[in-house]
Length: 214
Image (cartoon, rainbow, N blue to C red; front, side, top):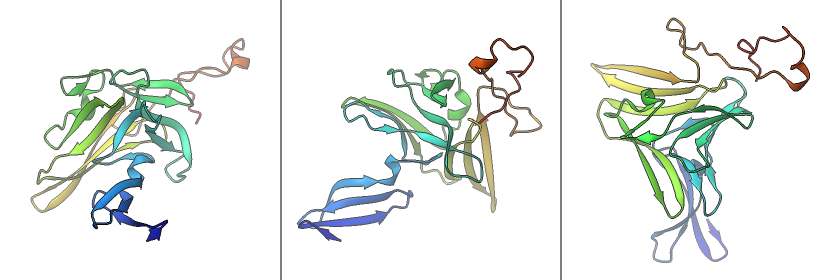
């Protein structure tokens, strides 16, 4: 592709990142003009990042789907704390819904389960050039061939890891949410509802521990 006297190339990388970049006059790869990993949907793949560039204002975050079948943006957003702490946060319609706790010693204080498989992948926290970013990086280990996070439509973070062993392929998944999941039903989740302003003086209309409104 050639535009305004510049060569442009578009490449789909093995990581899944679709990159559009300039090609220098010597044929070498030039500046990246746009890449899909800067605009994720509801999944975090290896080499993607969550965070904020405080210089440009660009933010990397996940947005839940409206439902499992409807990819329109839902009620939940997963990103990095904009106040500067190294913790992940989930917002529900703009209000804080869940916090991971600060990043310390290679794990999140309140959500160690999402980083416990340190043998398959690792997280890196960097703060340079006024850019505070958390990156998910998959290590090159034979058994773990694929890993991803998914922000579910009810605000849960589900971590998927694909293992290949003894000729078999297995998905292992773990879920993190503000509420404890029921052992017999890994999809169980509760939402703590705040009553609407018009209902604050009305009793027994809505049990806020049982309301599930998206």
